[in-house]
Each structure stands twice: as structure tokens, then as C-alpha cells.
Image (cartoon, rainbow, N blue to C red):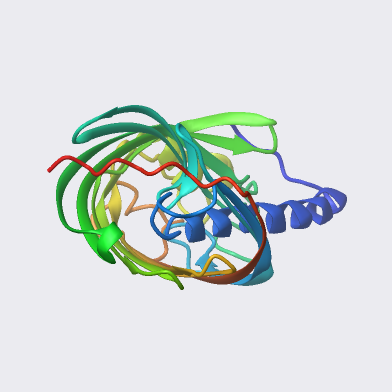
Length: 302
């Protein structure tokens, strides 16, 4: 496990700016993951700017929370292979009837160890996750051309976790998080609404759990005993998202809840709670868009 060194005061000032940037990107990813349905009569690309708020714990299992207001860029690109749309940012590697293979991304925020159960320990750098996601189409009702549609998917992303900081890029393990996904799309000429509900377990290897939950002998004390994290179950997650796109305005919100009971790191003193709740809301004004429209996506085979 890579051991991080503590930052001095000047580095902490610089990190505060980096924290806001990373937080903005994470909020953007959370919101665009519920952008209304892809590429039917929408421009190939759009860009806007707005504001949002994110309320999130420091990390999964932490008791401390942050409420952060910040500007939120809105960006959508609906190309043939690379897309930023209702499934977030991804690149389509393979599409065969009911099976799709994409690139998937996720991330977590940096954490300052001062004034928390991690006091005296190294700060946590932001984590970016990237890897393939295998998706299986399970069923469909309606047709979005006629105003509404709902779909069911099984998604199985496997992502490498990469920390950004000191060292510049560090590999911090692997995360596998299969989940069932239900999507309902409804709309017409004025606006398109999208509801999204997903749920499933999370698994991670020892290196990933060590990054957040291991306590070495160096940092152990009476209230924080030494602990070595292991590979295994990392809790379960449920996410509900809602968004609206009127082509001039985009608004989105999500609620994410993780149940950490029975997780492999349950005995770590750094896992203070058995729950994780994150909430995000944002609104953006779309002020730039292409004159070219995205190609019509083919209907998924039933």
C-alpha cells in the first residue's frame, strides 16, 4: 500500500482549490448520469453553465459530511462511440443486440484528516475510477418516439481506482459493482424527463479497502486500534435520479444510499457508520449547442 505524506499549510490551501474542482467534476458526473434520453432529436453537443449543491460524507463509512455550493458546467456529447449522456461519460466498445460493452468512470472526493477519526493520519487524495462495463438488456416497454419508454438493464462495471496527488498517479485497487437498472423516459417537444433507479452490491479488493480503512501500527492509538483491511463485500448501493432537459435548461437531482452492514471493513475504527447518503441538485442554462443533430439510436432488440 502506498503511504501518503502529510501536506503542509501551503499545500492544504492549494488542495482546497483542487477539492472544489474535483467536487465539481464528481457532481457533474452524478448529474449527467441522469441526463434525458440519448440522441433522438437533441443536438450532437451542448454546453451550459449553472450552479449546484452536493451534500456528501467524507467517504463511505465516515461520520463527517460536507455541503458544497459551486458552479456546475453542463456538457453533453452524443457521438457514435463516445458519449456523455444519460449513462454518464463512456466510450462504446461493443454493441450486439442485448449486450453492450462500454467504458465506465466514477470517483470520490479528497479527504482532509484533520479534526476527524483520521486525525494525525495521511490525507486521502481524490480517486478516479475507470474500466469496462458489460451491460445486458433485460426488457423494454413503450417507445420514446411515442412519448414514453421504460427499460431494464443489468450492468457490471469493473473499474481501476487511481488516486491523484502524491504520488501524481497511484493505483489503489479494483472495484466491481454489478447492479440492476430501471429507466423511465417521458417527454415531448418542450421537455424530456428521465427517472432512473438502480441497486446492487459492491465488491473491492484489499488494496482499495486499505486506502480508506487500514490503520497501520504507526497511526494506532487507544481509540483507533491497528487494522488490516481485506478483500470482499463493500456494501450495497441504491441510487435514484431525476432530470429534465428543455434544450435551453437542464435540471437534475440524485439521491444515493449505501448500506454498509456486513462489509469486509466493518471492524475498522475508520468505518464509523453503517450507512452513506449522498444528495446532489443542480441546474444549468444551455447557451451553446451544435446545429447538427445526433444520429437516431437504433431500438434495442427485444
